[in-house]
Image 1 (cartoon, rainbow, N blue to C red):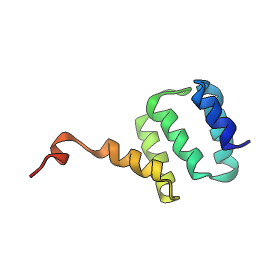
Image 2: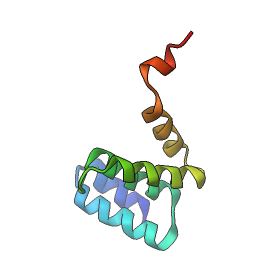
Image 3: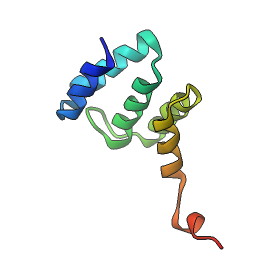
Image 4: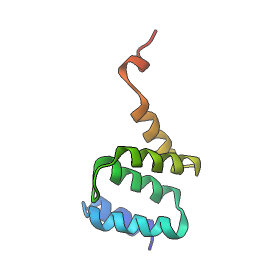
Length: 87
């Protein structure tokens, strides 16, 4: 099982399949990119019930492992208009 096949399934809107593949990758390798993608599945409710809290937990784990995508996702969801526009 590799990220390329999981990414291909994700990019072709086969979310149930990609979710299962990323889960398998994470269970065997703890791959930071696969952890990030699991978070994306949970955040958007793709192939799994939407669960933003669980997505954040996964993104924090991926971020600690060095995933820039996870760091960006966490930063993006933590921003609000009032935070970005304070003078």
